[in-house]
Image: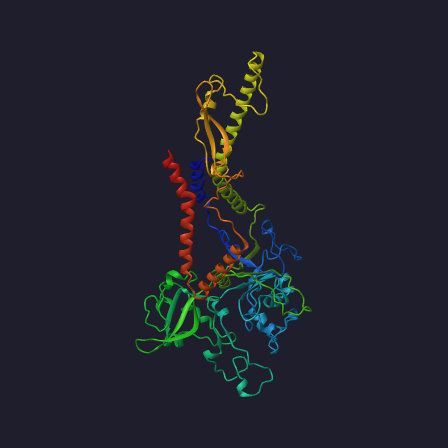
Length: 568
């Protein structure tokens, strides 16, 4: 491949780039709308490491039949958990037992059996087969994240009779109340906390606030919310989880209704914690704000302001819960997770359909996303690696190829010269001129007529020295006069030193790597990463990447291209 073809192939590679999604959301949910011919709404979801595996992509249209046979998660109806257990964590806390839910008992220890039946989302619009197997039969429970583990939620949903569970992200799942000092038999007033109090008085001191970099990142947007807005519109101490769902109206969106947009720190850096260079509405992709619990005094009027930062809204991997006793039944229903943005869309559709009078519910189909038998991207990465390795090895062996050609030409010429001399020696013997021994004789030069033009061209080539001829420091050619008076090149190695051993000159560009180099690289790289992440100077990484990429680009593409152009 010529250098020009190589550059053309590299220039065409960007045409193969396509927009892709992250690897984590390996599942999808089709939301089939009632009374409409429009295509379903597809949401991406991440699967759990426990429970049943979702239907394969090819089986996503196979719905359940009357006997319950069919692919898991296909053709299910959306439903909500009981009103007194919105996070589906009462059973994990020991406040409920859902193992006998089909007998009409809601499983709660308060003796009230009406919550489960009143809150079920499968009403008389569905057939009797659903009712005969429990209110949550062939349904997918929509449960917010938080308060307990994913597997605990799935186990409770399974005991309620659900066929699947969809855990969705929410701002409320990032907050909780502090239960550390709570005991069931605590009678002393000092033991009262957010879990055992009966006076109804809770403060922000009882709130467990979201974690930096885990739940939010102030680098994508920061705001300083005044104290009067914080106390007048936001509530983080409402039972059971502490967060009031009505807070979402003041913490979601790109408009002025979002308090983090209204009090953007990039527009006002006078708060004690400093401003932000990134506007919240532009830098926060999730469009959601998390109040971090940190507050600063405003330098203007001395008022108190609370920090709000951009919330993460990413798919998460649903790990199993090792604290669940082995004696419990295993989770056998599929469990998936969707983001806050996808949950907003799904919940709006489900609640809108429930409020309508159409008579048809929303149907959900959960399945694994399409995965080709052969991963084309992996093949492309492998081919690109092989191509780069071939280009590197090809260009690094230029001197060796040139040396090989010179040596082959020399051997070919020597063989032809020896053949001519042997033939001429036979003629001399037949004419009585003399005999020529194989050893200890001086070779006579061939006549000018017996040397082809190609051989003359090879003979007249200047002698190669240094690295090209085995890196020898000696002269590799001499000249002598032939019988006809012509001057010819004879190849023999004459060492310029007194030693008969060949002298090698080390290539000044070569460097032999040893174990100490590898250890030094590991130590320096680890130290650099520790400094970058400890002091949070991530921008330096961009500068380092810029230098590295520009150097590689100049060495691999720009420099060879300019050399090729100027050689013309």
